[in-house]
Length: 101
Image 1 (cartoon, rainbow, N blue to C red):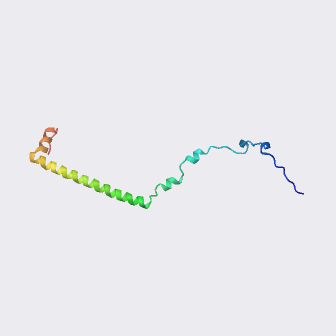
Image 2 (cartoon, helix red, strand yellow):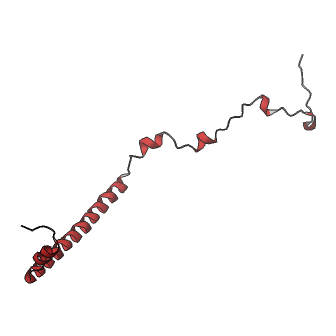
Image 3 (cartoon, rainbow, N blue to C red):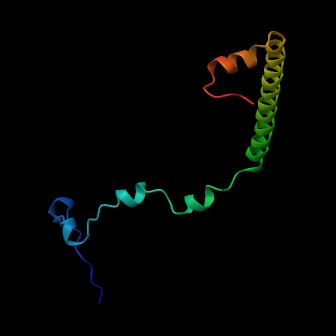
């Protein structure tokens, strides 16, 4: 003997209450939190970026060195010019509160 279930019309089917079957838990905090793997992967730098960092460092070093050299040259030129007038010693003796050796 074969048993066939009667097909009900969609309007006649009672809709179950989802709260009876599903535990509704807010998971937005877990979905929006940064993954734990980010802490490990943030130290990985692609080779192309590493090469660009090396190039940038060399360019910045050359800029700093050239500016430091310019500053030293300017300071030396200024001191030699002031010494022709005896100004560094005169200014120090006028403004200093104690004797300069």
